[in-house]
Image (cartoon, rainbow over all chains, first blue to last red; front, side, top):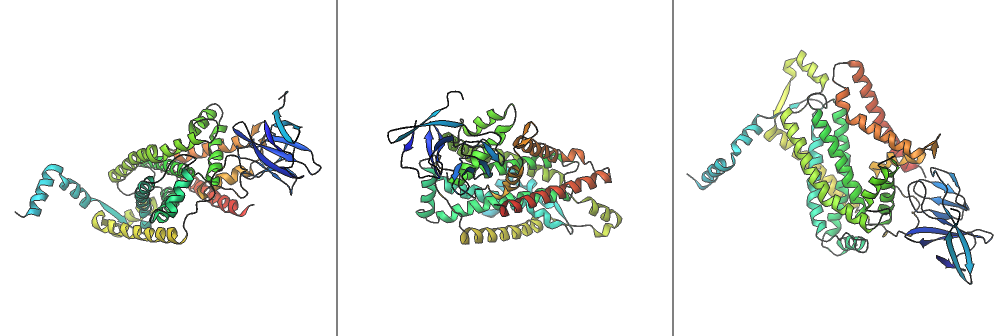
Length: 101
Length: 361
């Protein structure tokens, strides 16, 4: 699944892309590493966002917090966000479901 | 015989309205220091009438699809003559109606009007409160803006937490796994067909029961009147009480008109299923206490999810509240005091959580 192009994102930034029918989140960490997660909060299904000020993933609905690997670290979310594999081909960034998940 | 008398005769022969007039003449309303609370139900009914009229007007232009919904409301607000006002009245009136319905319920609660033989009146009132909240929730989605989109996501996810039937309820409400075009069509059908039908039936039943049993007088006053029968006062329903009620409606209309004209209801930003939930997102004020509670619950209570505890807690509290007339039979003073205390707690909890919800970041 195409998530975006190299250069769409600056370090310490995130963007939502379509993963099938649902939103997913592509994050570029401050040191330039890409990660991708489902953007559907495991609490009540709101769409999460990357917070550059906190270096974390945040859900506006009920103040849930995840780290960039999707682990739920505070607030009401009961489970981590599903993480996807990210790989870069040329200048395009692709994302796929993890094999073992 | 004059033409007027002839018409009256014909109507009497074919409609027998004389019986209804006689009934209205006979009906009286007690007058006492709590009489003002008798207006609240009528005010709610008045606002419901406004909802029906303005709702029909909005239906003339509204289109229930994700591509058109937001634009059609935008069109109503910018192009249709007085469309902005009609929509603003509809939104404000909805909020005032929920407010008066809650006020009506709490006044009935504290004046103990739900006691025997009015159990069914209480139950039909609770059903109406559910219907009114259903109207609020389904109508909120119709403009298809960001706030309503996420509110619907969360609001439909909450019953989805219930073990067993939860997922079935979620898919029934959404018309699928996610909030999509199917959800909008469904909510539109609930809002303009299913709920109005149910409301008509339950309003009819509720009013019928009120007529059958007459206005309830608080137990404390009944005791006073027994001790001093001269203090007992009442007025005919028609025209005395009705005229007073009309004055109350007039005040409601003035408040509604001022709110709708000076604080027009906003439309917001069109919903985008692939945008993050905006910061500061919150539900309508009447769901705020529940929203704030969910926000404060930890992710887990031992092995059980925090939300599930919240959902079960609210469900259980709602059930107890509904069955109240069957607990309080008016025989034990201790039970009555406990119930009044619980009512104060519920009201205080709702107010504190609502205020907290607005102040908290």
